[in-house]
Image (cartoon, rainbow, N blue to C red; front, side, top):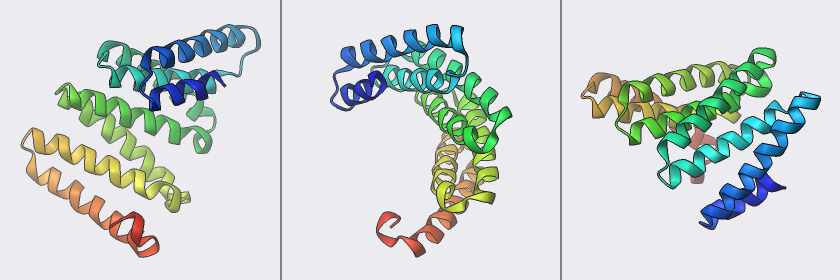
Length: 178
């Protein structure tokens, strides 16, 4: 409930209240995980949400540290159960890359986007309907990085691939992808 409340506060731009809710939830999950184990998933979710919040309010170091910790947990969980936890790891990589891109840290952004793309490529093999749009978005985002550093051929290749994915998706759901 605290995580959901934090999301509502974030969506309504009540950032101080969002931070309080997320921080309280994180404290509870950390204490509970020490005793019972198994709450890593919600701990990572809370860290990820705090990272998003801190990015929005321009607390970039806090955003990076929270995203990084969430990513560490999510990658560890994905080793044990890739199908269940790789999507979350890819999402955190994408958000971390977006943070880096906004700070003009293009090499870090490229690495994170590339890692997210690699995960989405694996996920799409078993469930293309669920992950194709995420792959296309990550490709488009990485293309922005390539464009910013004047690697135009790589930018073009990513844009073309993303466009092909979006065109396939539009065949099924035209309104969502035009």
